[in-house]
Length: 232
Image 1 (cartoon, rainbow, N blue to C red):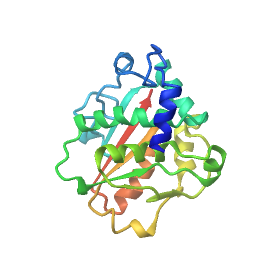
Image 2 (image 1 turned 30 degrees about the horizontal axis):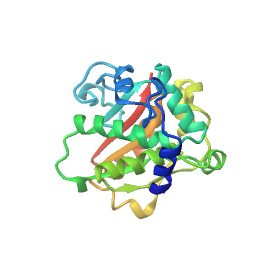
Image 3 (image 1 turned 90 degrees about the vertical axis):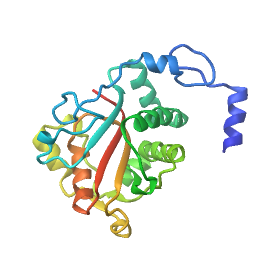
Image 4 (image 1 turned 60 degrees about the horizontal axis):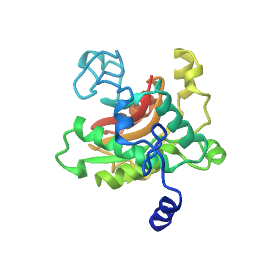
């Protein structure tokens, strides 16, 4: 696969979506010019240290920090995500994972790699059949290679094909996700006292984050870090 990708780069080099320079889908300069998502608590949206949830905001909240790369209102970032998610341009995700990793190591002090585990956001099999791949899974694989943190694909699975969260009221979002996520029994002992990293492309509400985080914390996970490409 690496040789194949190198061959493609030689005959049809990547071009930056913005400046059209070769060898990157989004070059460092164009990436830096897009709107950063500043370090805020992803509950109250006020400034915080290293994207951590404020202590005062933790009532009923199960995730510990949500690291977000860019604002989704950036036309360039939203275009990259849509192409990767809906038009089979999976190579975009490999490149974006480098930027995710850089942001992660700035905002998380790692002492022992074995204390961490990467998992993907589960996708119902009907949705996977429609798209043939899960963007979260691809991001996690590339992130794992960069970070040397172990990635387990099927720790959590989705039991029903839910409606799109962003189109529902807050009350209906919670009902939509009720009893939706389960933990694979073979991983119940392996996640105890782990710092879990979950990587995905976009979030618009915190309900999905919290429902997945809740089931992990109920199974004795120590810390939960979400890493997201974009949010609004």
